[in-house]
Length: 201
Image (cartoon, rainbow, N blue to C red):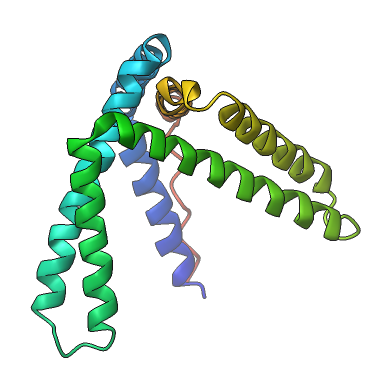
């Protein structure tokens, strides 16, 4: 145990030095994401279309990789299931890329369904475990918020499809960028820890 403690301390010192020496990279990445997030918030329709096209290419590339991987391992259990999944990803990718407007409508419905399902699960879980979890109220609140978001999206669909994905993407980028900026500033303030004292022999 005594030999393991110095190693852990050395790892901690190396980690502190690495974080402090690269805080500028965290800051730059955070600022870029903040700017992109603000642009998406100010132009949600453009951001929505960009997200839809990106999702299409993501499905297309993953489908191609999946088909190639499955065909190279035909004797692996679940071959047909893997092939069907890869072909579905290919078809979905082609559909989203060549029919972007229809793809936006479909993705918006998928987002609304996800919020609805997540909200229902959170509400049921919070009520069922309220005697065990001290934070069940916050889980209940989160579930209600998800259900409200789903209701807003569905009540205004298909009109909400023009801004939903872009707005959510912008909020996500902005909050992610803000967290990176704060992390960078915190890393800049990290000081060297005092050298570990060698145990007496």
